[in-house]
Image (cartoon, rainbow, N blue to C red; front, side, top):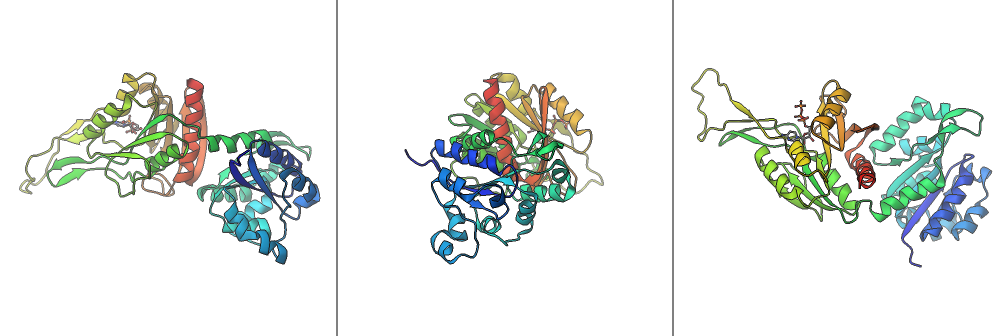
Length: 396
Ligand code: CTP
């Protein structure tokens, strides 16, 4: 049978290391080629022979080994993998990855790789909750590393709390879900960026939106197998490959484009920062003859609410950028605009949001919510697309 993917499994020291043997077996059953790198402490828990037998390849563990370097050294291993999974990821290795320490084979491979890296942490609950570990996790997420948050439950040490590695079957499912494209065959329409509302032929009103979140969502939806159309306000971004981009300027133009494309879409994600008001534009350039100038602003049409109203079957996702009462306002938008989901984020803060590389959101849907901590927009987009796909499939 054809190999579908090459996964490098990093095993760190921890009692959950025995579960990773099962992970190798599950991945192999799905035609995934697995090679294993073990840390020294991992080998105290499980022998390399177990992983060798299950993966069909000898296990890598030494950084400075002349035979290894010639055959499958750290650079080759880093290049070979389509994806790297570290399960279990120990607090010590997490700290090394976060701070760029490369003192063993696994941490060196992580520094050398350019592929997707996913960590399944496993440790005592107090260690997991320790700010040092949490800050390292936040740092890694902000750099685009995916974290499969540990389960809550009874632990080998006799304590109860968060820190137990998630089950191998779930890890395997998450890896393959991403592989098979959770939005295969679906049409996703996304609005992005700001709008530009003319005051006269040379001036306009706009906002701080860079379009980065919407463009990242378009790329992630495309990566998940969707046919993506992006209706974009004026931004300084290169359109992602394989995506149909329709450029607009004003809220009215965005309204018309989105409405005309929405009939054949399965999912609409309204990430654009659409002007709520538009000036009554002057035909000629305004001259500065008056001491004061009052602009008359007319309310624009709500694109998201109109789309949700006119196509009931469409799965609609809105954004709510708030400076106060985040949860109340976001939930109000969910109900008032009849949406399936709202991703709410704080704005006007130093570390994320408008025109920043990172963002943190809380997503609300009828009867539930999920927090996504501060991370790179590209990584956040991938996680949001997974959540949207999961809820879309549950609804349909
Ligand atoms: N939106 C839209 N059309 C508009 C205004 C907003 O489609 N004319 C969409 C945005 O794309 C976003 C969501 O509505 O997904 C939230 O936008 P926001 O302006 O924050 O919400 P409002 O409903 O306008 O509420 P408020 O101004 O009270 O924050």
